Image: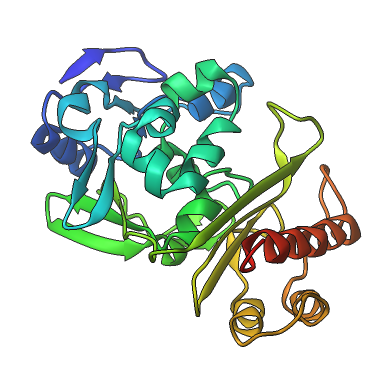
Length: 281
């Protein structure tokens, strides 16, 4: 349903998921909006090109919840950072998501913004995406043609580029349960203690014989470091793990920080990860 005939940004407000998918398939260049926190920044700065927009807020009854299904955590497309922070299952079993949501923006952003929006935005500095990488999350994509599931680690193809097709919407995030006894680590480094875009962010999960590390703000996309993970899992000490990371990570230089700074911080964070997640740490 069209509720606005504005010339620059005609707005569609679907009442059902089926209607949303029909609009996404039938309207060229349609821009979906959940919380709108990223889109409004672009709009206010004059960076949002004229396009039709789709407000998904009426789908909250179907897509706004957080639940468990077959042992996995399922986060709906309209679930906010605040929903994530306060959900008892997330707090008990997925502390990386709680911490990532806590450090994302101010409370106003957390009350409006969504994890799915953070994924779709495609920023390599996204605070929640490394946590989703570390937990092995998947995203479910819907269109009028059907449904498909994609690992979040395979979702990005380049800087702000994804595998999301023009007629698809993300309906939910599915996260498998962490292994029993796994240790969790999350750290964001920015210019300020709060409301800062990250210079480096890392999320890690360490099990008895496995390690998953994910890094944000160091490359064009969030990335894993499998060689470093394998070295740690095989018993490498801190110096060996840090040396491996230096061969595997080539951070970017940009307006927020330098390559050398990012690499040094990443190595320090790796040492902290190893200390905090080691047996007895």
